Length: 80
Image (cartoon, one colour):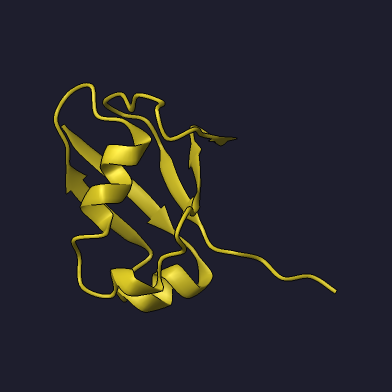
């Protein structure tokens, strides 16, 4: 299945795009998706345990991604 991954701020800058389209097998998890993203150039800027949202809710590494799900990798945010 093709999964569209939305990237924001520093992650979009690092990858040079606001989104990635990844091919994942059926039953892939959030952890599987992150493993695929880490294979890409510029993945070194990805946090050790980045926050991931699945269908607008924070997701755990073991959550299964379905066809058509919306995925976003959220960069660290600093506040003041």
